[in-house]
Image (cartoon, rainbow, N blue to C red; front, top):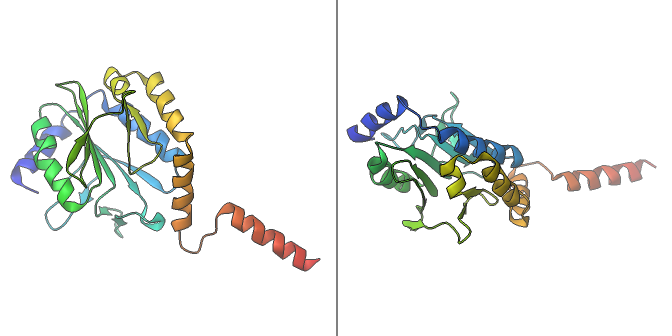
Length: 208
């Protein structure tokens, strides 16, 4: 990590915008509804030899569920989380430029920046290098985490009820249900609940 980025991390550690708890709460609820997904808050992430950022928030798929990061023996995250989010104020230029480039280089898939100065939620697909607009209804539908729906205006306005109502709509979609099944299927030597139930029924029939 460059000296500029290290200094930015120190400055950011001294303050937290009041939008941070709203975004964190949203991701926390998503984590609870999506087994195999983990939320991190100001946790050090090991990216390459010199990259050790502390993103405000991240969501990752756990390695045992097919995620692209790993957990070290001393419980650090090594490798890129799928989604990183930053709440930016005075450091917004660094978050949208130098950090964006670093995260893209190391393999983060999507990047959210809550820009407090301009009251805007930036949504970037780092795989294509494009900034994406919210959908026409004002909702950011995160691609790497199906069902993670974020109402941009509600987040900036700190409208918790609207934020959660939008998220619940996303969690009720077939796309989220399919994602949960894919995560479960990715676990080695672990049967899905319905498969386990069929196996137990077969065993009982053999005992009769």
